[in-house]
Image (cartoon, rainbow, N blue to C red; front, side, top):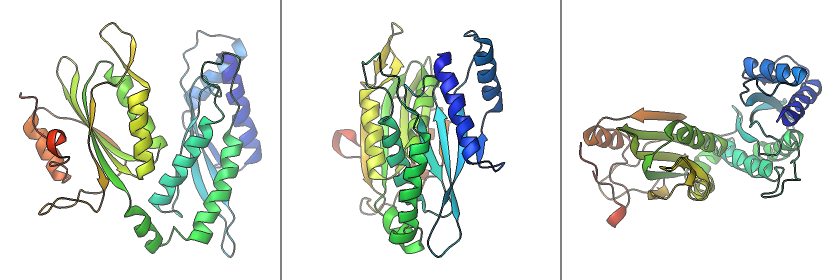
Length: 302
């Protein structure tokens, strides 16, 4: 693993040389960076290491205006570049719709540089510089040619956004499972809320997503196809007991019902009983979602 950590440190050093201003490349967790240097210098695999996370202020040169910057946040798993980097962006220049679109593109691009599945000889390729180049090219187009950062452009783009409500029956390894869902949500530029009930284990989980349809679709696909939990034997397993209760445009709602509310950020909420869950969903105008067998109902009585 130390070989991958060394490659990560080298990549960060190159980025700091390329962007020498003090706040251009900021490592979010200094303790993790120091531990990584210590482990590599001492060739010590026993040192506990956390993933390295850093933010790059990427300059965008726009015709007829001052240079703007977009914050590119990069999360490196311990086996990066063999494993894919997780990335997201934040900008005061672009609308949230544009940020979500760009984040989704960058996530897909980062995945192409990871090692090929089931190929032990493929160690992947560093990709941050390529992501920066893509961001500069596409970000400039969004700001300049399309004008998506205008109020009108943002409103039009966000009108096609969706809400999704996903019910997950239970989680055995809930801390890791929840962390994975948050990482996916942020990586795809989605806002989300996770509602859960704690009994002997976490159960009756509701994941509420808000963002671009493609991003929500990618999230749902990963939930169904990747290992996210452990079974009763402690073995990794995929999610077999989830239901997509709704996935609909923000403008869609049933007659006599208010549209679902806009969601920001990521939040996890523990609820005690069905009454508390119903109130929370009602506050978001998402209590009556789905139809037929997927329509929301209190299935677990306290």
